[in-house]
Structures are given as structure tokens and as C-alpha cells.
Image (cartoon, each protein chain N blue to C red):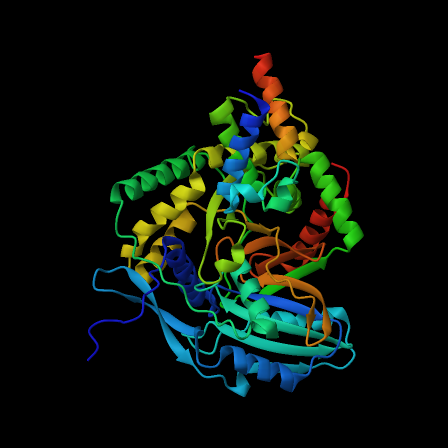
Length: 432
Length: 83
């Protein structure tokens, strides 16, 4: 019998635990966990056998692909990795004959929305050949990767020069100390949430959710050309200021969302903020993010949204809200996962939000070619949490901006999805 | 406080924020080239407000001046001396 683990463990951070809670909620309601897919577009046909060989070499006998959460004797949850052996059936393959982009998107969507084969599996791959292009789809579980980490990991898998530098899962201490500071952060977050949801009359503007037994996901994807991206960035600089592209994008999304609303109210937007330092390639596994929560009135102009959001961005940074979220979430690790999921689900009904938002400004995937074929695009298609059920995400790849709208069919109808996409694009490119 | 002292403090703060050695950062580099993003920029504004009592967003410092440490330090210096 083994009494001591010889290897240093990775004890989950509070944010990792929250991600595991969201995974639980999504699985209960939809059968699909809290996962995301990276779509890599190559300008040529990638050899399937070579690709399988590359994956086998990079992933066999590693501990990143499978694992689950467990609790130590002092109750802190940790990540228990399992050894993984690569199987050829682990890659889905689609050879589509000449198809329209819309049909390719449907296949990508189906791949991205496919659940993992079991609760322990954290990565899945699909390869699509179509119109002399290849789409590599890597599905990843948010319990072990955030968006940037996953990009960095895909870079590692596909870069043959890095194969001799094996990755290892990181270790982290259980952080069972500084309780006073953790409780102080908890108090700050409670006060912050109370101030956001203060008035009894607060009416959160949400899209109506229709009860449906199944919630298939839909994605609406736009890649802007280099010229269009440059024009959008100029627009952002002119209207929101230097390095304030995220605020500009969020303002355009808020305005676009506003147009879908049947009644006015408060638009509440939880956003993910990346807390890595610049050297993000060193933090590949697990979640290195935190949250902010913005509240604006509906019915305003983009310029007014920019000013309000900038002010709240400054205030929340000044009050160290992202830092307090990280600290306070450590206290939530005491709750068993199922209880946490129940509590979070209840809270999201009491304290609803309008839509999720994130913007990844710096890409972590830097390969220009995969097996001598040029990489032309990379974008993310995340499954959003059941509540709010709709999210808007921006990423960049090689000077091109990608916009993804993701939503459950019972929240974002096809017409609303297309309208939202058009509204956002006209906001980004138009005069403010 | 001289411009050089302001620059040194800004470089120290930025280095801490992006996880680099201060010696690798020069004052003529663009902030986004150093690895700054919107959150880190706002954190820098908070630092400037605390350290130099200058509210960047309300002080009228131009967007062009914010892009580099050199010009940002000069603008902060002008505001401090005018006070």
C-alpha cells in the first residue's frame, strides 16, 4: 500500500475549482462539460497518418490527457492525473468533398460540441479535410486548460523541435494559509456583488430562455481580414484609447446585444481576465484567470458604454477585484463539487448576467507551418456556461481578429445570433 | 522629482507587472511590445495615481504620450511641476 505520494501534487486553485463546478453544471444540464475547442486552419491537406503519428508521439505515456479531481487528507482538492495511451480511434476524421463554408462550419460545430468519451478525458482531436484545406480541432477541458494555455499546448504538440522538451504537469501547494486575507477577500467580493445587485429594482437584461430538454450549441464565427482588423484597431484607438481594444469590443457587443432586447434593463457582463505575466508559455496547464463584472444601462450609445466600462475597469482594478476573486474562490474549495455546482447554479439564478465576454489579445500559438503547410487561422469556439447561455469572444491570430458568438439554442435563436453578429460587426467597423 | 526618477519608477513597476527584469526595458519601447495589455495598463494608471498623485485618465495626457515610458514620464513631470 502506498502511504505517500512521491510526486509533488498540483493542488487546485479556487478558480480551477470554480471551473470544475461550471463543468458539473453544464454536464448536468446539457451532457456537455465546460469545454472549448481550438480550430487551426491550414492551407493544404495535412497527411492524416503523419498527424496521428505526431499526436501519438506527443501524447502517449503522458499524464495531461486524462485525470480527475481528488481530495487530500487535509481536504484541499488536487489533480490526480492518469496515464494515457494513445489510440488511433481517438482522432475523428472527416473528408468532406467540395463544400460551402456553411456546411464546413456545421461539421466544426458538431466536433466542437461533442462530449469527451468519459469524465476523465480532457483532450479530443478531429481532422477535417475540405476544399484543399485542413481543419485541426482540439477540444480541451477547462478543468486543466484555459484558452491561452491550450494554444500554447497545441503549439508544443505540433512543433517537432519541441518534442524533446517534455512538458510536466506543474505542482502547487494547497494554499491552506493566510486565512485572514482570504476571508477579507471574501468580504470584499460580497460587498462588490451587493453593490452590483444592490437595488431591489435591478432588472437584469437577459435573453429569454425557453425550456428545452436538449440544448444544442450554435457558433457564429467571423474572421476579419488584416485590413479590416487594422481599421477596427484604429477605431478602437480613436474611441477608447491605447490598449483599450477590449473595452471597445465589449462596448460594441453591448450595443449589439442591446438591440436584441425586448425590454430595457441593466446589462450585466462577467468577463474573464488573464492574470499571467507576459511569459505565458510557462503557465500552460490549469487556469490563470480571474473575473470582473460590469454593469451598464441598456439603451445607451457606444461612446457612453466606452466611458462607463473604462471607469468601472479602473475602479475594479483599483479595488483589486480580480485579485480578491482569486483569493475568495480558495474558500469555496471546501464545498464538494456537486454542492458547489448546486450553489453556483442557484446563485446564477438569483444574480443573473446578460452574456459572457472575453478577449485574448496576444496569441500563444506561434507556429507558421505545420508539417510544411501554412497555418492561416486559429480561433476558439467555447461552450458557454448554461447561464447566461450566450457568450461573445474575440481572439487574434497573425494580425487577424476573430469574433465568435456562442450560445445555446434555447437562449440564442438562429435569427438573434445572426442579428447580433451583424450588429457587432457594424459597431466595430462603423462610426461611433 | 526629476523625469529620470519618474522613468525609473515606471520601469520598475512595468517590469514587475510583465514579469521581466527592469534592465530589459528601455524607456523608448512601446508598452504593448513589452507585454502590457489593458489590465496591466490600468494597473499602471493606479500605480501612477498612488505614487505621483496624477489621475492619468482625467489629466488630459494624450493617448500618444501613454504609448511610451519616455513620453508618459514627461507628461507626469509636467503635471507635477504645474501643481
